[in-house]
Length: 213
Image (cartoon, rainbow, N blue to C red; front, top):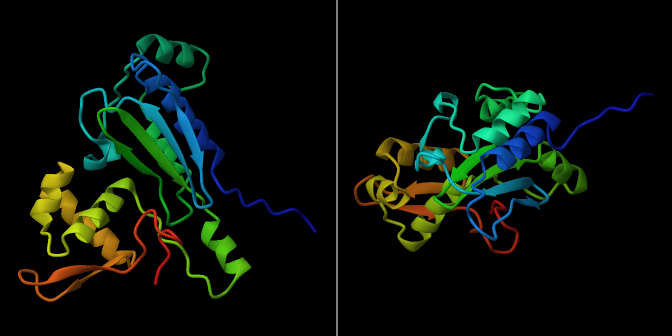
């Protein structure tokens, strides 16, 4: 007869994502602000300004990204207050909060913004408890959503064209396709040369977003 806690979002991951948004945002973008958007299946924390070196985090290995601080004074103050550690390990600590589940945080950046998506650890459990005939939702990263948009526009699109449109390596584009196939979001019809892709879930923005057919 004891309360059993099942948190939707790891406290450490939310804390690190918010700290990173405050410390690393671009304060020179006038009129911008940090946005925290909450959905049933995820929380998205978006801050102004992309990667300091202009790279796109979705094309990088998060575990190998060196510490890059846009605002040295704010970082130093947070470090002295022990709100953050001086070494650049914030992204790794965000991921560590999800070590006990399959779903993982997603990172996405453009030149004008940086977004961290934290999935709800209990979302699929909640769906099953509410109704046994509701299919679990498919958690997609922003990069995977863009791949779906490209496929919807051109089902015969190649991995090379996807890599070109996303400005990532061919290897990374193939990994995105493999992840979408593993999640049951797409399937390949026909051969690699003459075949095409078929989308198996509702596209972003449609009713019952990301619900499997």
